[in-house]
Image 1 (cartoon, rainbow, N blue to C red):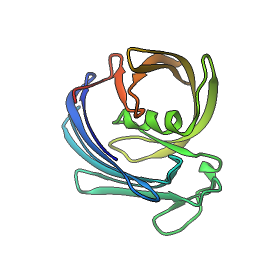
Image 2: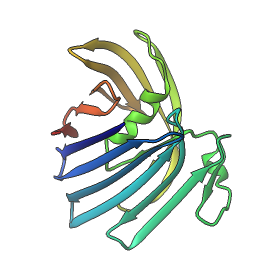
Image 3: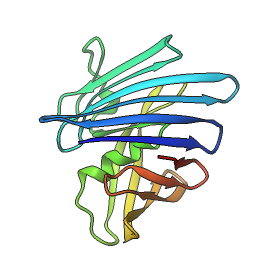
Image 4: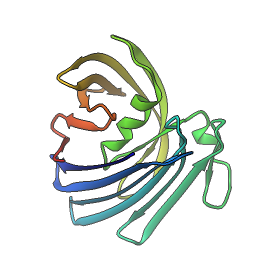
Length: 182
């Protein structure tokens, strides 16, 4: 399976182009994000997932100058590009890249959801453009399916919103933040 998506950034001038390819033993996501905050920023990232949508590796580049690569061993242990253990990320399964709605697809696609089911996760939150990362708590609550879209309440600390995803689990609407164009 191959899927493409384009998101409009509604908070800043910008957009994202994403390609998702499901292969025999993995899912590979490659994306380019362009936005203007204080200055124009160009982000490229690749996320390698297993067939259960569990993150194995993430590689990011900001303006082709700053780079970050993290990978995990499948047991909740994270490592940097030099193989050094990152104990502060222990127990995280998913990543959350601040510049993209794609991150929401990871916990959504790993679970079989039933009405009103709520799940909590620890995520590796990666700030763009600094590439600083930390462990953060997040939760999703499945609300309903309507007109081919699934709706979830997403929470992180005091922030709360309702997002809509398509049948593949890709965000269609993240109110006031991202909207899908294709």
